[in-house]
Length: 385
Length: 91
Image (cartoon, rainbow over all chains, first blue to last red; front, top):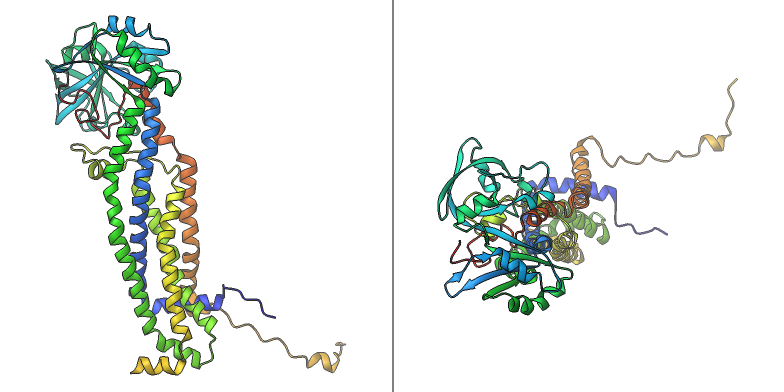
């Protein structure tokens, strides 16, 4: 009794040689399949990886941000009074005033963030903490030479000495921004020494943030808007969905391309019927012919699917990817080098491969089956007609 | 003196040598098949390795800076748009 084995080395060798007879069509099929997998996998991975990264970034953001508002819009917050009143609310942890704003700088608007000695505790050792008159630039400022002074214009124009840059991997945190000493930031933004842009707070449990809102609003003597980090994250995720949702439309051309590939397979199958007829007449069995046909397809599809997946992975997760910021988020100016990792990407990769490989395998099997079940004499006569 | 073999043993037919699957002219095909079989596993292995080694780390670097600077919004939403406050009246 002979045991059926799908893998047959002489037949694989035959299939490889057979592909070499028509290298152009084999290459075309390879490129089509690889591009399809790349496109489908990118669509599947982009939104997912951005959402995951946003959740990680939001986990480090303040749980609550309190901002004073007036009928005219934002208003500076008196720090001492705000701190005194906020600390009376049970459950509020680490209230800290933030000083930040948008000013004009070289090449466009820059986000200014003021830091003081309190930030030194968590400050990375390899990056200098800016002192008075010094500036630490975000990744967008890497084209500015440290030897030149940096001129920024807010309520007043000031010049700063560039003492360093944020690491490239921190671009997602602050790209078109500049970190200044707190006093310099106050001066630049036109705030008094006892004022701040807003107040950041922490809570023990995330769920508390929502519950503390009315208490915080009631203890402060001014109208305030209170934003939770969950709210902010929800906005970001909605924006990511909106921006990446249109990419799903690219499934339509992908499906059309898949249909073309399947149709091309069918046409190739008809052309091969003459060969199949001759081989059958020479004594080849139907199973061998079908396997030969499948080997030919799989020798192309296997590497094509893997190369397509790897291309999508590289495009998205190579350190310093800039196309996401430029094309998906439409960021002007210096490109934002995004550093994402392929955490939890395995499912998306597998789905991308299956979405292309399954219809292709079905079409491959069907075209091979159609050629094999035909009568050899008919196949030869049909091809010579 | 040489040992005499029995006639039956001498006349036993030798098994025919198996035809070579990869004769000289088929070397290229052999290389193509080996590449086609190895390449997918190599690429999948490299991606898996990268996921294992770098998984979550690049995002953590940016997250550390978000915490360090007390930021609420990553740089994908630049200051001044609807994601930030105050959008209309920066201080």
